[in-house]
Amino acid sequence: MKQFLVVVMLFSCIGLAAIGEGAFLLLRFEPSNINRGMGEITGVVNIWHNNPFTAYSNPAISSFQKGFAYSYAHEDWIDFGSDSKLEYNRALMTIAYNGFAITLPGYNSDQRWGISMPNTYTLYPFTDVNIEDYTQIRAFGLAINPCEIFRNNHLETYPWLKYIDLAIGANYIPLKDEVTYIIYDEDIDDYQMEKMKVDADVLNIGEILRLKYCFQDKLALEAVYGLTHFNANAEHVKYDNDTEAEPIYADRNQGFAFSAAVKTNPILVNTKLHNLGLFDNLFSFRYLNSALVPNYKNSEEITGNGIELGFLDTFYYRSGNYDDDAGGISGSTNGWGINLHYKDLISFGYNYSETPGGDLVDKHKSKEYSCSFDFIGIYDIMVK
Image 1 (cartoon, helix red, strand yellow):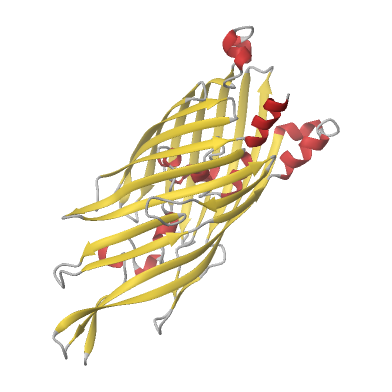
Image 2 (image 1 turned 90 degrees about the vertical axis):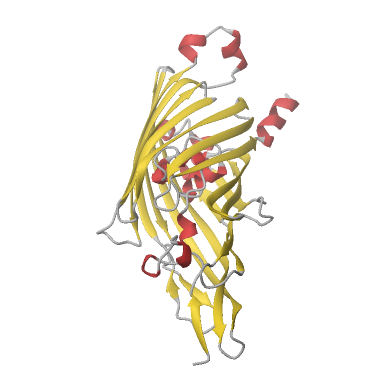
């Protein structure tokens, strides 16, 4: 036998994925530090932030956003030492107006579009050659909230529309990846590297149902149900050689959330702060809970739950719990955020989170930056 295979796949060698769990596990990494601070998988129902990362886990959520928004993050996911590490880079954009939204990949710090994880990893003890591979995820999304669209034109005729939202959305992700093989060639008595390209097209769909009611402009209550199907088309990896096709990671995630917010009207009425209209809520409390079934194996379940406390729609504290017994990753999550904004026209945000990392790392610590601009709203103010 002239050659034999030493390394099979990127990520298999470092414990981030396994053949039985499906390929492209990076698909299910949660990009949003807002969601990660509140149990990580609870993004299926988190509709309250104008941040593109929150619309990745559930594509329908972008229909609740407004204007143009951009989110960016660079993270050292795992540091192996000796200048060898995995970097998790991500950037997304959303453009939304009156219940209709699109999601697009942004330009990230890896000089690629969307979400990417490059790898520079020395495969000791087989060889001291550095292998450089990457996985790239570019999400193109579309979302619509028919209730929002309809009530903008017919609220007087159907006043009940102000109490309900029903949104649907989908993300299309054309995947590109490179996998490195290390082959020992007996003829030259040395190792050789060979690269193999893989392609796949993944479709993620999501739905959101929200019921809301405000008591005399004082206390706003909301109840939310969310459902997503990740890799709904059960796509397989397509290799450019004779390697057998492998199923891509998939899951079903559903959850619920409850929100209560004290409005500014009854307390700050007739004050300068109220007249400026800088924020809608004095205080807010949100509870989110979700259950995720990986690869549609009903015998396995990942659960997450969390809370968020908000002050003046500007300062946020987050805490939660993530439990994945099968994957060996469980523990508490936490985070905080600042959203500097003028009304809902312009904002600049910073969010920090800490989540459990399992056997490879104690905790993942991450920070992200975001901004949003409602150009139509700004234009309306300028022409008045």
